[in-house]
Length: 245
Length: 309
Ligand SMILES: Nc1ncnc2c1ncn2[C@@H]1O[C@H](COP(=O)(O)OP(=O)(O)OP(=O)(O)O)[C@@H](O)[C@H]1O
Ligand SMILES: [Mg+2]
Image (cartoon, rainbow over all chains, first blue to last red; front, top):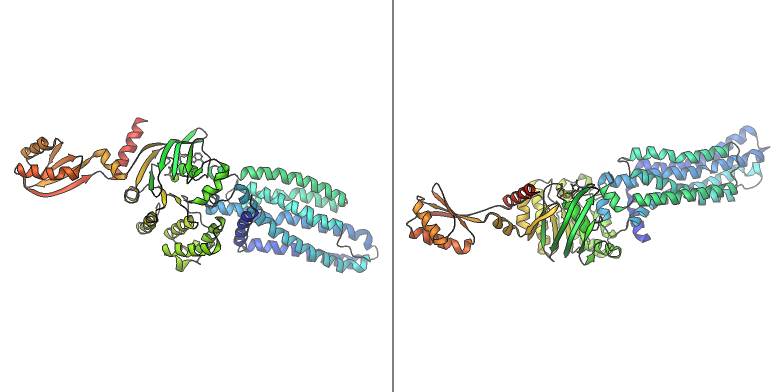
């Protein structure tokens, strides 16, 4: 497998969806909303409650907010991944693509990278802004800099990439079985369920400390590996040319 | 260039291609004819290593089918124009070609030169930056044809390149194919256009799940019904007809003022016909050659195959 060949395919896909305003808007709006919206909310809460006992409730709140980068990492790439497959199906361009000297894995990896790279850039950029703003608005109330810490590193560098891969693989498997982008995305809705559960768990008091996050990451790794096997089987030239609709 | 032995493809219980053996020589234009569902596309996909084969073997462009280490090499030597053009509509003709050239790892300078040469050849250079979505069907087909050529393949598989095109666009595509023929590229051409096959192809094969027959278009036409020489006279009489039968030992029919003579070798026999008619007192007004078209031959071959199966 040649990474350069996969990257060629990824770059081509990125070039195409760059012209799709909806996808681009999501990539910018969601991380920006999280990284500006939540610090703004903290300012409001501090204003209402005062900063006397901020140390008791702020950390839990901030951690839960940080989890949104994991949810975002699963939300952002589904449209790109679905488009990468369904778009080729609509244009009937898979057969010419498959007749170039590229292996199935290279094409599949290209599709994954096309969704993964822009997503992670958006998530990481958003998380940097988020940390800076959170520190700026909580520093005086807490008396110390909350970020960076181990939790956020785990969230954005371990859990978010895993969540993105999980969502991309799921979208690819679903997209292979549908004929338009919209229905592909509808199915992808169930992707978020496990993440929403985790988020609510964090909100109602289960502590998402580094150990818990590491366990969640392990579960994710298993799911990602499993889905990889499924998508690899789905994205097989014989299947694509003779069974895909 | 292609050497296939008993190539077979089954889709579940359906046998799409049944024990097809054929050879295509370097520089040859081979026409693959057959009714809808005959297995032409399936055969091309097997030969282009796009789908696996159920059984049989083939060597294509010096690579063995099914050998994993040969697959990428094979695909870099051949160009495939599928039934559906499959262009990226939102991007330009130039970008479509550029992408495929890069996937084929054509060196940047060579690629630029190839794209310009091909788009000029297709008369599309002026429109190179316009999105393909704004192109007519014929223009899209030409872009797709240019795409199959961007890496300078030695063997081309063209799956019905003129289907669904108006006569003018079809002619443009055909002219390009003739141009490629002059460049001595080997071409495997799936088509339903029998006059196209007759004009372009060195040899044709007729497929109906199995390969029914294979040969040059002329051999198929004449081998089937022979050639007939038509002689129009002042008055076609039985005595002149009989004189011809006696001299040439061939069947002769009278049709109004015409004699219809079935010949095997017109170059040798036509002068004899003239002599015999004149000797028998006939006055020749006009002579012409009547031969079955490839279409007649094709229809008869396919119907016979249907009847016998
Ligand atoms: N993916 C598939 N699954 C099942 N059967 C298939 C599949 N693809 C082709 N077939 C069957 O194989 C046979 C040959 O099909 P193929 O497309 O190769 O014919 P063709 O000669 O190219 O026809 P056409 O002139 O219509 O393009 C047909 O009976 C078709 O129904
Ligand atoms: Mg076909």
